[in-house]
Each structure stands twice: as C-alpha cells, then as structure tokens.
Length: 101
Image (cartoon, rainbow, N blue to C red):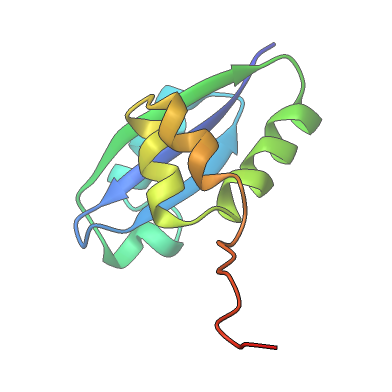
C-alpha cells in the first residue's frame, strides 16, 4: 500500500497540505465537501503537488514538515525549483550589525 502527501491550492490562493492512502478518493472528498475541513469554505480546489511514500508514518512526517514551511518554500516545491527550495531552507536571514564598537 502506498501513502501520499498532497498540496491543494484553494480558491482563495491558500494551500492545504494533507496525507492519505487513496489520493484520488481524497481529492474528490475535498471537491465534494464530504468532510468539513479547511477547504470547505475555499472551494474549488486544485491538486498542485503530490508525492508517494512507502508508509503512513513517512507520509505523515513529510506532511508535518511541509505544513511548517513558508508559502514561498511550498511554492518552490510545487514548481520543483530545487535551488529556490534550498535557499528558503537556510532559515532566517542574518544581517550584519550596524553598531560601531
């Protein structure tokens, strides 16, 4: 059995990140508003990213990781812009001190 991490783009431009063992069914459930969740008031949705994993634990861990990312880092993943993804993975920018001393 395979497990999936997926990103949906909502009508308001926001992203929803989830995981499932049946990607096609889960996307339809979002589209048909089967379960009341984040996407319920943000329809229509569009599947913009998915990645397959061998175990539920692996998929869940990746989902949690992506949920913690900035919007631009998620966009780099969606666009498969690996250089940008790495750039946004470096953490907060540090600036040189302007104080003299």
